[in-house]
Figure 1 (tube, rainbow, N blue to C red):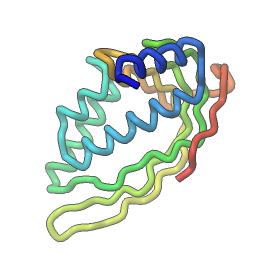
Figure 2: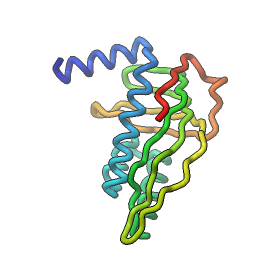
Figure 3: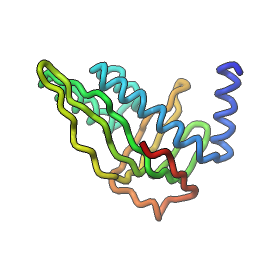
Figure 4: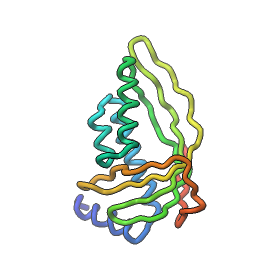
Length: 158
């Protein structure tokens, strides 16, 4: 299957509201974010967010703080517990996500320390499709799934 055909199929599925695709988009996005953190690459990290995204600015600032201390973060994985799809289209995903950070290790000269496992957090995440890539446009902490749920997807637990 050619990439253009695959993109067309994915777009059609999202337009018709296939909720399983939302968790696949999140997993792919999280994998790219983790790779940006391991590489210590603020530009790659910034490119995962829509221009002007406050969440993107905060994520890049946090990466730079780790870099100033001579550390990088490896093994970062998001354990996705639940995805509630509020709206889905070929160009926008409006989700309520419950997840947590697991497996992160701070690494630097003479340092290798496992970071504490995060608790599950629920937040509203809006992704927009730009230039063929999904970018996070908005993150709202503490979102209520009860107000916005159209579909619920239980995802893999790592």
